[in-house]
Image 1: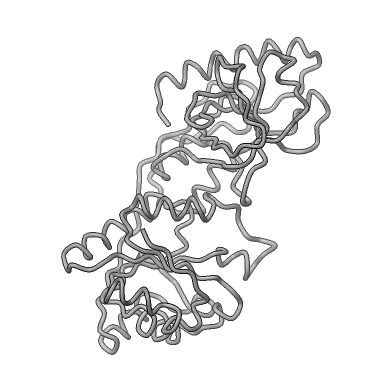
Image 2: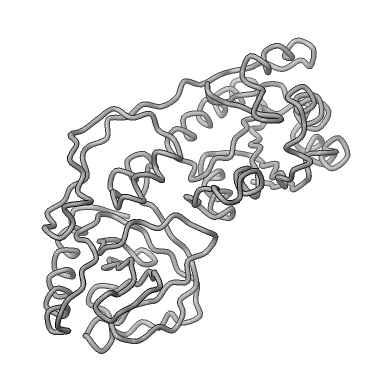
Length: 337
């Protein structure tokens, strides 16, 4: 997959190489945070259109995401780093990406200007495939109707893909400590969106989030030196400095994977020891020979097994950790990363 980076303000100049490599591409536009199953449905439709017409598939996406520029104080956490987003787009069989540096100047483009400047002059799109709720241009004032209005003038087709609705089961739980976070609902039909997935992650419902993502939620970062309390308790952990403002699950203990290896994962402040800083720590099951300090790792979440608890005695914590590891081992026998 080839990547072009630019401002979006003068794509006719900065994308000359793209137009030569991918003449009249099929274009799909979106933030694509997490490249979840709803995004995958749109990209699959675009891929089919590209294959049927003998064109390349080009994704247009943004870095930073628009909310980071337009509403920085209210910007949501991310489901994936930019590098991860690009890798997931490649997995979705995208041939090329136009990664636009999102700025206030770019945000000021009217929908009409966006269509002419980016889609026509910059990309010379043969087709534009987007979600049915797609919005673009200054104050998100453009939509599919706007794209269709200009289609004849600029010679591209428009396909609006219906949003994806999934039956998502209730989050499995057997944790007496986490009653406030337990999901009381039965399976329900949900419209998949990045916002909905973030809500599930924030509540600790990582199994529900995984259904909509099409894979477990992932954190990435470098392993740093911690307090080494896990090692003193018999469970040496990797202390993760989480990268890129990624969405952290609710405080608690989770079954999951560190670099693909079964792990027990703690998210929270370590209240037994009076901690105040939220940390992500992972213990690889039955391994005490791993040295990850200074290395970049991934942590994937399968299921939340309990909330964060302050224990009166360290021995109580140790017994609970024994139980946590046993439960993680049982869970991870039945699910895969």
